[in-house]
Length: 578
Image (cartoon, rainbow, N blue to C red):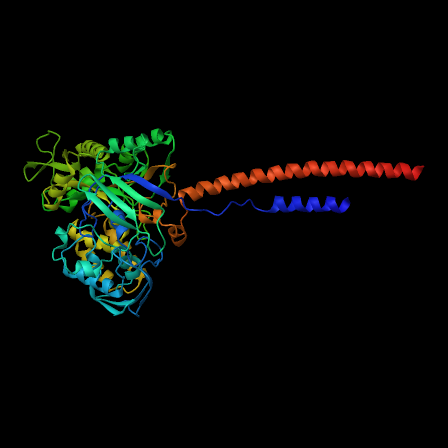
């Protein structure tokens, strides 16, 4: 019996010292998912881009793929390409493509498609992606060396080509787009290599996607996606609460977090989508054409009050650095809130209140500005109302104009505004090449010192050199901001966990993107799905319970063995005495 006792003790030791382990994780597969989105983005070709609000790149990328996975990763992750190798000064790159990839219509994907795509973007009309070929960087040529190799030659060094450019620009099928003369009026449903096919689009109403069963990484987890367009935030979240939709692409407002958290089957997850609210200004309109005046306005804005009041604390104050604080390219700089100093700056600039009515004058005219904001965004309206009160303290009048999204976009495109509320998106807040391009095309930034640094940035041949120069550029923004960055909201998303819980919170993108629906993506990106996180916790808890049960059973067995041995020992002693 003693060997048995020793064996049981050894078994218990192994159980206690071994970690609790769960079964292998399997990605949930579902037939249909209904996702409410807030805006119509056209037929989802790269040329159908429409400004915020709403997702665009994430929807386009359901259909189209890029050569590398994502422009916000620390290191390039191969996707349609398997590798990219630069020459010594990073002006020429040789890119090797993945074999066995086909377009949705069955045609083979080749290097000719890649070379054609970059030439098409470069020569055609500007769109959301074209700067990667025609401006930042300038691609002199993209040449197919053979069926699976492309050589890119840049006009100047392009050290981030694989990390950013090749990871952001969607590849087009040459056999279709070579026959499209005007891509901006192209209305056919797009063909890509991506995990989903767009099979139905009803303008201003809905999208419907079907899974690409021949996707090169295997079939996606959801067979069909229904995507109704719901512009009104209240209607969108009510549809989620009532079970009409399974998730919504709009960020959960802080005031709804508690209510949604108490709704059956609805879960909230941190998405960390790069987002901001900032004010563009029209520097052609006096007195906004004066740097001192703009600096005074910037100093008069109490960003912490905006975060506390509008976001209920769920966000971070805006930074002069402009880029998102979680971007690899962000340089930390703090905004200055000093209304007294703002008034001193205005006084020294000769912008004073001469008639004592509380409103300053510039060139004899009252300083009365207007800010245009989207009528369907309560947070941006409330933000503008608070800033109106803050600027009143320094003698500047601000009037709020709430416009429907279409009119707002038209006014901004025509530069028919003084101040305009704008939603910063990942492409602008996490991609330095886009920020360089947007400083001119969107923000119309003009600063001689910036022009010198930009020239050096274009000549830099390493990622490290470009990063250092970008930090110097962001330091300039402290005294001469290209826009008034107000805050970076926390991004939480709500979803019905009983419908689908395989969401993947990807840095910069939130959860509503194709990687949430591709089984291989979690391992490739090194990110846990929300279902894996919760399941791992459950497995750990269950494992510990099993250990305690086994230990308890073992203790009982040991006690029983001890009693049995004691009895036999006692009988043996009695026999010896007789």
